[in-house]
Image 1 (cartoon, rainbow, N blue to C red):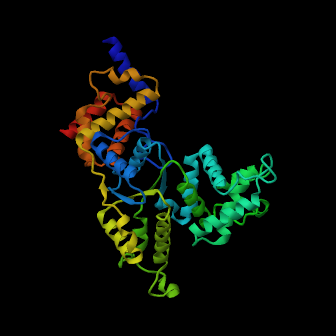
Image 2: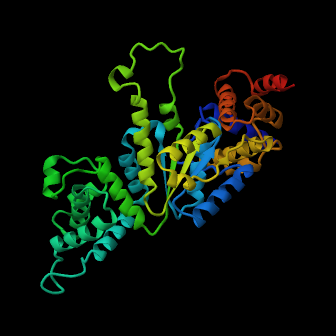
Image 3: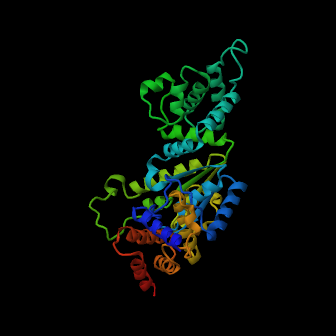
Length: 410
């Protein structure tokens, strides 16, 4: 009994040092999330996995309310589909530099060795194995570049010659010119380069240029051995840009004075994003998953496809839905998070140390959390953060703090 009580006291002391097990309020695309989905959502993951493995070049909408765990779903998919290059982009933040941001995320997740392998294979296809003046001499770079241009200009006939030459030069110089390899590698990694550095490589633009970033992304995805999944969060940004302002909002400046009554700046911005998404759909083997907050958003998106590119309308799959948590999901989330917390503080024995499996909380309080949050995962986590912060900062004993919540629940 003494050992049991000592462990409870030790855990409370560790928490009171400022260690909140639920301190990360919401999943993001930048911070890795190791916690798997709760059991009620495992079926959703499997359905997505089946679709990814059996089909390519589709758009799969995932519909869920704010805080329903759409970004957490990305990490669960990435952990389960580890043999795919799964990348995350939020339209809320990066829609103005979409291609360069997607390329940066693609390269970061692909890593250097697979990138070098793809580039090596491309150069071999373009004739790099054929040497000047015999086996022991270097490859004829100009000849390789010329052959590559002939091949790719047919496949990518809509691409400007300057953009195509930049891509070919960057790849072939990295692979075949040992004196310029380091500079070419910087270009491939999407680093900022000035005019002098670009001139040394016989390049016009670095990969901040949207056209260059798109073409490099397309070539790498189409020649990668691993499949690629693009997870676009906040896809409803397109809809919010297109939506007219409320009639009740006072217009200090009417955009129609400059742009006319037919096309507004928002329409232009939305069309630009839409056209970029359509371009992404041209990339062979690219699977796109989008998140939306409502079924109505999907209706609007399908309407835009019907108007602009009806031939691609069939590529939009029927949506999958992220439902709210069930009560059992809250218990599971709590237990999983606490287990991870115990591991992080090197006390895994705490997982089975207490008669109450939900210590320092209890089942009554978790039931209160579920009801108060109405099953919304983000609201659940927010409430758990609040309760643990009270434990950390309150001068009251744990029993007094929990009694207050028990009284609310009753």
